[in-house]
Length: 170
Image 1 (spheres, rainbow, N blue to C red):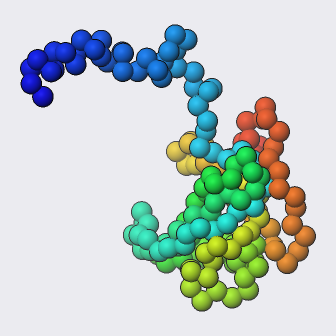
Image 2: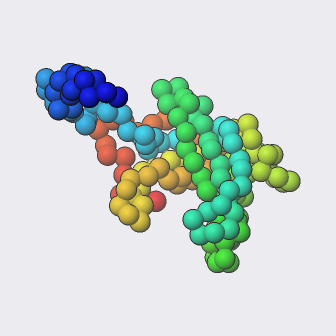
Image 3: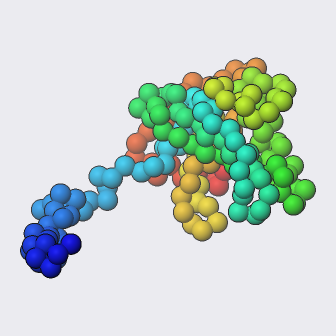
């Protein structure tokens, strides 16, 4: 960029403010108008769209699942992620991951899986809550995977107005 271009660019951006006029507008930036990436608490029909092994922060590989919302329709296409630490150094962490995988398989109607690819394109129903993580950031958390062999609840989302945070920390 030449000096003349830089000077012209500086004039048009008005110290950067002109660049953001669409975002800030006359009334300023309203955080309430920006949609959250979190799913509201509720019951969702999900499709496992990706199942892969990848390195975890703790070191060993984990099973990383990407679940895509199928219902309710207003959230169709949004994603939820589950990471299962099946190879963690801690036996307790591995056991928790196995229990989670069992619940996911049963929710998908699978009684025996030979590889992560057996989960891809399978649908399941899960109750999702919003819960703060260890750093205090709000995250979606599966409260319950609904066993496909039993009665599965209807898909719904909590009524608007609630903060969606589970008061019982589930």
